[in-house]
Amino acid sequence: MSDERFRLASVAEYVTPEFPPAYISSGNGDPLAPQALRLAVRLRELGVDTDSLFFPDDLTPALPHEYQFNLDRKEGVQSFGAMLAFLQKTVP
Image (cartoon, rainbow, N blue to C red; front, side, top):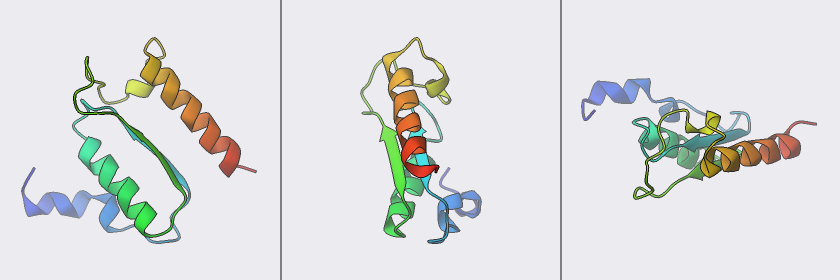
């Protein structure tokens, strides 16, 4: 993952202030979590309306990629609620 060529695949390197509002979440056990966090930070730097939900590294059991579809866990329900709130404020 330290190979410089991975940077070419990072969306965060190419976003502009015209990027649409975004809701970004990632589980603490998701291998893509660092990219999701970087994208959220970059969008905020650009002034893009961005809501996010991330979890502490020590949360157990760890939340995998696509954790938000598991509504048997409180974190999945939390993400679903946050996503709905984001949509309600963003979509006319």
